[in-house]
Length: 271
Image 1: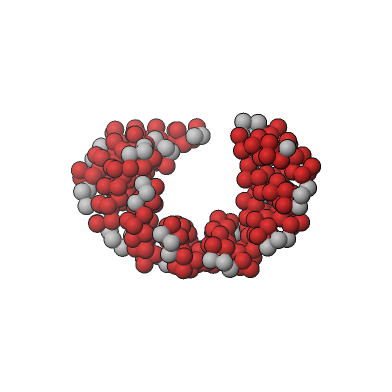
Image 2: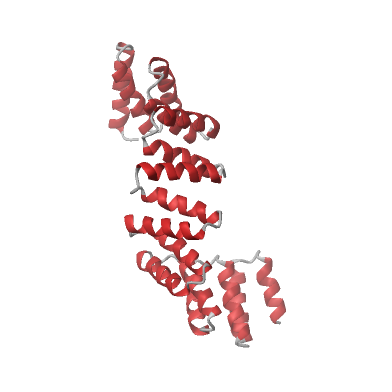
């Protein structure tokens, strides 16, 4: 925090002490504390304000944010639910509640809250993306793809949306579209190693061994700790009966990941 922000908080604190009945000032002070990550102090202010304004949804919403940051999901959920009950038309309230449910592994509740978010704000790209992830988890692939595509339409530079859309296309057997999306990922982020790895897997499945080798090597170049990439690359070389190259790759991999038993086991098998 900069000195000016500290000074601003100090001045606000002094004003609140001088004018404790100025609730607009106390709200400003509470917001400033929250914005500057003074969570415990902000909570004290909001808990005081809620006694005066028991039906003000913004206060409950901010209390929910604070409890979430303090890693108290039970109290956060109660605060968000209260905010939603007081202002069911506020998309942000539903979104935060959905995100909290998602973190708790309450998939059905999260889906329901994300759907409510989008019914109020259909242009929330993050809500579309998060909902798509949950629908994919529930194996509702058609709707998952639809929401990934909407997220991309709203935010074309969302690397994760492109990546997970590619994953779903591949899972559905639509290899052409999957490759198109993986290439979009790489155009947005040339260092996204998992995109190269998945393209390598597709190339291997299609028996394009040279392309598979190229993509697996690129994966390893970007992420020398990617054990699956080493194992896949070795599998290609073994398939080609190029055991010397497979050994070279495994020995190089072991130097960088010497505690990995799978690599040692593969090397022993080849020997």
